[in-house]
Amino acid sequence: MLVFKQVKDATTGKSWIETPLQGKTLLNSALLNKGTAFTLEERDQFNLLGKLPSRVETLDEQVARAYEQYRRYKNDLSRNIYLNNLRDRNETLFYRLLNEHATEMMPIIYTPIVGTAVKEYSREFRGPRGLYITYPDRHRIDQILQNRTHPEIHLIVATDGGGVLGIGDQGIGAMDIPIAKLMVYTLFGGIHPSATLPIMLDVGTNNEELLNDPLYLGCRHPRISDDQYDEFIDLFMKAVRRQFPQAFLHWEDLGQRNAHLLLQRYGHTDCSFNDDIQGTGAVTLAALTAAVKSIGQKLTQQRIVVFGAGSAGMGITEQITTALQVAGLTPEQARGCFWLVDRPGLLTSDMSQLTSAQVGYARKPEDVALWNRDITGMIDLAEVIHHVKPTVLIGCSTVTGAFHEDIVREMASYCERPIIFPLSNPTERAEAKPHDLIAWTQGRAIIATGSPFADVIWQNKVIRVPQCNNALVFPGIGLGVLAVRASYLSEKMIWAACEAIADCAPINQYSHAPVLPFLGDARALSRIVAVTVAKQAVKEGLARVDVANDKMVDELVDALRWQPEYLPFRVSQG
Image (cartoon, rainbow, N blue to C red; front, side, top):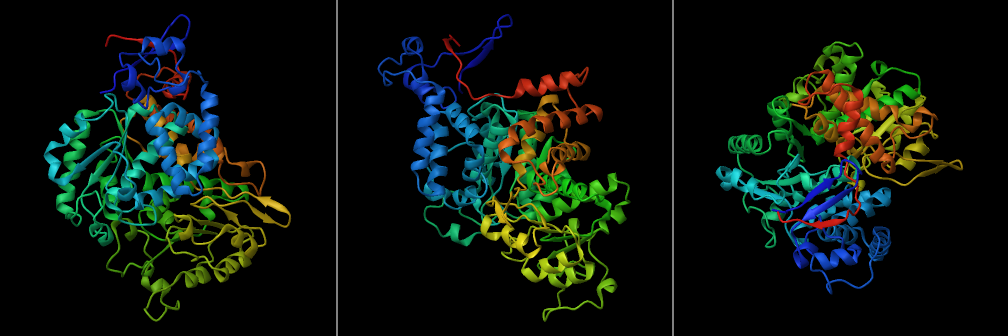
């Protein structure tokens, strides 16, 4: 285990690091390594004399060199690999570099390029990070968790790789997703990297290409059965409770069945969060809230079509439904605002393959009996648009170009400011491109996308395209939960996060501005979200620390926020 301690003098307020590590061992510790920034005194005290070039640099000078090295790489995957290698050498330098170039580098370490890294995981593997737990090791999970590098773990991101972004089952390659998510927690939320743990639950894969790849590093068998999976997860959850009773557990990229099942089973008994369902739903609701407010309407007035009713689509639908009920609608009235379209077309109650999450939103067959159907008998998206005349169109389908010109122009014919969110990842799977949506609506569409897109030039005006990025919401939620040690994440806490984000949207100042803050502002935004979430937890009696007043909440949040900067070192005997 890594041995170090950060000490702060109560009188002077000055901090330093105490560690017994010396020489090459210290240089090989990514969390402690300062490289050429070790002072001459530190080099002498920690047996580093002669192990570094003679010049002592500042962190800013190191950042400048690292950025120059980064820019030499000609493709995004190479840049992703460079940044991950930098993190393995020097985490402080890595996070300072990201801080200064967050807008440019977020797509490289996170979506969409992390999707490419996931697919190439086994071929580009350079070294392990985090923990790997297989089904055969299900009775040794406590032992595996005890093999972690850092003793104090407050935040876990776990995946089984069953449904990654828009690319499906990626087996063990999905480990890059928890790693990337935790980078974002640290970058924007300020969670100390030593308090985080990525976990890959390797339960096999149904991806034949991976199973037949001689370089594939995961368990080379089909995914285990549902009963085996449920047993495995139950054992995992019990072990996590024993080892980390106050940790926040973030689920990521599970298959649709498992994502909803785990949220229902553990959402109110364990402090856990499903980003694909709750995170995607929260940031989309924040964008929608800001959009509706900007045009002087109410959320309850909207007719909403969701194209793609999987984990993400249903997460969005359920988050908006909760908001509609908060606004005064009954559950039935709230569900009546939605029309869901998936692979079988418009979802109707006579369909046999509806998931438990979809059932309450399915339309009655008699209500659409006169609608046109294609040769397979399904009611397609265009027909739904024609009859429903939606004010909001949300895409989570991964069907490239699904929001084509005819559909968009029809929306624009009856809706002054159509709200259109093509949210599918990666970029090439988006339902529409922003510049097309702007052109087809004569600049009237209110847009948010799932992947990053360039600004659109329309009639000599620059229209900035906001990314409906979960990174705007989950770091703040996690920070707020941890600050007050919330017993679980409630719906009201998520709704509070949505309102905080919507209140920070640029569209509140100008009607054609973005409906979401930009990633460059995400660190400041995450603090606002964290304070809001923590205060809501206190209000609901979910905080496991005594909080005397609102000022104390701010102090608890700020106390957790790590800054990537070098501290002086002192030798300890521990």
